[in-house]
Length: 279
Image 1: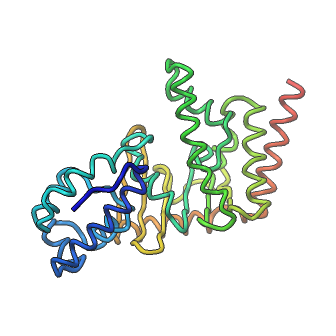
Image 2: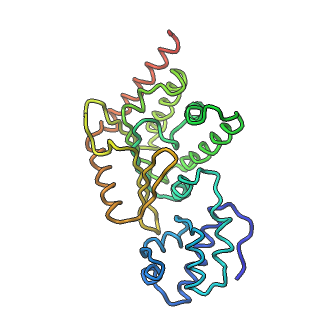
């Protein structure tokens, strides 16, 4: 069994996932039965086969043992797991790139897929105030590359609930915020994204403990992702995904309508622009 040629990690992971499916079928195993041998769920096996989940080194060794693949997975999964994104976020970013729908709640800042260059620069400078410019430039470039998935006019569906705090915190100053919010408003006006704002006046809400991202796929179970500084958890556990989906539904119900949200975003953007012109 030969390994794939040098490809980008996500493409390599999809090819390895195909090899996993073929090896499982040759062994006359279902996803569920293979999962039982590996002590994971059948849906987890399905996500490895679809390329939405990484095959980590210990899992690769167990696959080689159970499927008698002669070390194929151990040899090839190292390259497949390379990523330009931070380790805690890499798997979520790669899943995001092939999702058919993304629903997210952002508590304190405009999420990465909706950021402008200047806004992203300000965020990364705040995260890493002593980092050299080339390091910041690389992080910004990677973030903008992620956002290119919105170049497709219809897929993925992106539905974002922004806490009002993300509008009011002046990341990078008034000019940067005016540009950033106009960018979000433009995407909403072009019907490329759905955006709602959760206003301060609503008080307590279902996701006060942090951010939330839900992802759906054409041929794999849904995932949820929660993040903290330098930490992230991606899960396919049905009960957890269902609970997080319910939380997001509550946020949608509590937030302003998309039309009222757009009006608020544009009003705040104009306030920032006026502040820049008349400091």
